[in-house]
Length: 340
Image (cartoon, rainbow, N blue to C red):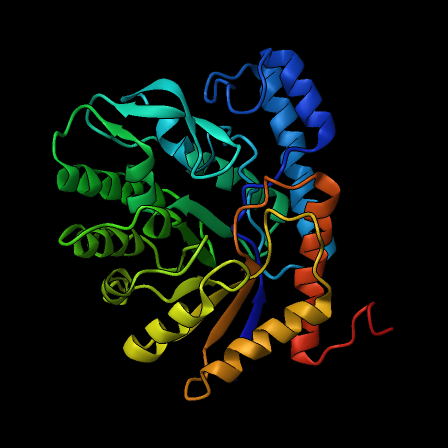
């Protein structure tokens, strides 16, 4: 029987009070903040905000709880922008939208950092023995794509180095149920011949560093056929599909032609649109996908947003969490507040 799991890919919007306080403390706006250079007042604000977003997820009855990545002012580039071997360059557009990040210029060997592990350890304390923790990282291809290499000198070598760095970070994580590797660059800037296979191997290297279930979540469209075929070679538990904004026909073609993993992640609510989907819409989208692939019963379906959620106002992000959880409950046949 398929396990239905309500979760998100993280990167939540800062609570309004935290945004105001951090703006006053740092004197900058989001996208220009100096991540990693944090005094006690800044650390305290982030800790309070983390408590709030963990409570948001529990209140919504999500099955997996993420840290929220509120410190990730540079979005998916964050694990590099706070690294000692990285110098931050100018402001760069974050994919094709109105968000920006500081260009991480890698100038030396990428050794161990431990930044994300520290965030996750703080989250486990808030969960108080609950085993629902989900870790979130940029996938190795997307992280290398968002960065500038000024040390390794070769695209393939740089990708391998980023994968090795991420694997080392994962090894320091506290126990977690799931690891989401976010790989929008596989869609937005698809790797060409040779690098597509290398990207799959890089994902494999990171996934091998954990005993948790690993989900590779791509979004903003459908994966190209060759990229998908190579990604299927990676030893991961699930591949994520954008059901909201993706090319559904291309996605279904890939799945029917090359199969898919035993589990799947489905981007069912729009992480960039303030229109909040109803629980019934979430349920219907889960059932629609299952109807399109009748020959396969998944071990697990991770019902999630198609993108990160930091684009949304705080009230809308919270409503999206509730819609996901209640939609999954409907799909399970459980009674929800919507039905009551």
